Image 1 (cartoon, rainbow, N blue to C red):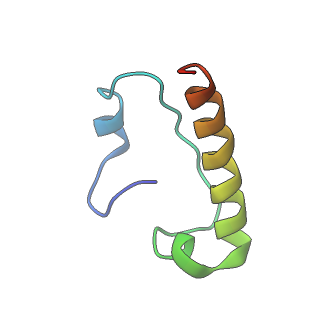
Image 2: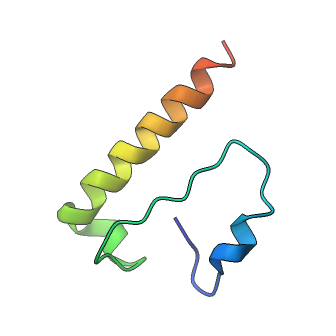
Length: 57
């Protein structure tokens, strides 16, 4: 997710692993409580963390 005022370019300097995922039509506030946007966001985060944390076991 992107914070208000944050630029996409700022993420380019973050260390790996990282992914940029857009949910078309959603604003940052929509990701809090609008199911058409929350579901896909949670699914993407779950997949990402599951894959990354599996490497640490």
